[in-house]
Image (cartoon, rainbow, N blue to C red; front, side, top):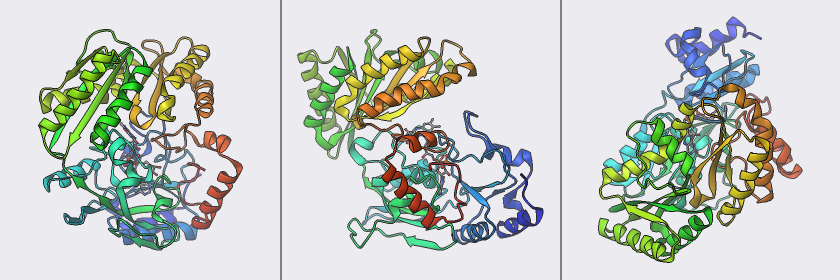
Length: 470
Ligand SMILES: Cc1cc2nc3c(=O)[nH]c(=O)nc-3n(C[C@H](O)[C@H](O)[C@H](O)COP(=O)(O)OP(=O)(O)OC[C@H]3O[C@@H](n4cnc5c(N)ncnc54)[C@H](O)[C@@H]3O)c2cc1C
């Protein structure tokens, strides 16, 4: 299917020739994502510079029934930002909406446009001795609009919540072209339905986020990173319970990694060294933050780990002796996805279960993997404190795309275990195109009907990101 030239011209007129990309070479970077797992066709990439231009684009799209695929930093992992292969969907890039409109240090808020990269937001907050706590490995490229549209999580959800918890207000262009201006800085507002939360996590299927008011936190005065090894996930759970009760809100990260995951990072990524080299079955990274001092953070971490060593919960533990060494510990954790890519093809599961079920889940889902794909190698790691694991299965060494033919049966086997534990098959990366069928197969009839009615009400012409989520 192609798009009529006069329609392309009408869309182009809204942003100007320079910002309406038509040539294959110009649109290529927008048509596929990093891993090239998802790719599509488009007649046009539009790069508007203002909310008014976005509104004009959606008005015309609604009038002409033209599908629009919003795109931020293009780092999404479930194909939500990629057009289909019909060549009839326009990509709407938000990257030119990149102003920080206001930082209110007294209210602890930052009002930013959708195209501002997460790292820029974090740096702007840090420059004022404040912190925007959301942190993910793709933060140099991922943009605030995408972060909110996917309700991104990352490594600090334990203490500060995910993107939804860090958003106080939104500006959204509805499919009709109307602008919902809800850019408020209120921490309390019970005046009716919470409309902004319809758009957070909607993956661009209900409207286009053009700006947001973000919640900032004070910068911690001290931070201590520690690494520990445990013999089994049940011991990691004991350590987590102890750390959470001893440190309370000061426990800002608790990451669990299988030995195979950290070895892959060490083998494939330069400057990565696992802090404890014993062949322990599982590794844990703990981050303690103190609002008072480095000494307090260090003292708390020491107390937690020495108690765990005494009880035999932990095999070995080491505290980072400097900020640089703490960053090295984090680098091991954050390099695992890249190391998996270097190692070869792998099949991913981004799941969550109640934290208390993590050990039993790992055992049962591990058995399901072995039965379904005996040649697969489990590479399990993730945000254990949030009950969120990346339960990935690596193909045999050097495996190519043929291993991906196991994707569906393997997903089905693992997600069946997820369901038994009352978990989610889409913990933080979203549904996009990848997991739409799974969502339709597993949500209750009532929930699905409600989702469809919300979609129909807001987007009756179905122009917003068709084929994604629902
Ligand atoms: C190395 C790496 C590490 C990652 N780590 C994490 C992690 O720890 N936690 C996590 O949650 N995710 C993680 N991700 C996934 C990804 O970075 C996040 O989903 C991120 O929020 C996507 O932001 P983006 O700007 O790149 O959005 P895109 O990829 O461009 O888009 C994602 C979705 O949001 C929609 N969208 C984008 N902008 C808008 C907008 N302005 N209005 C409406 N809809 C919009 C798109 O249509 C699409 O459905 C990781 C990705 C990579 C590559």
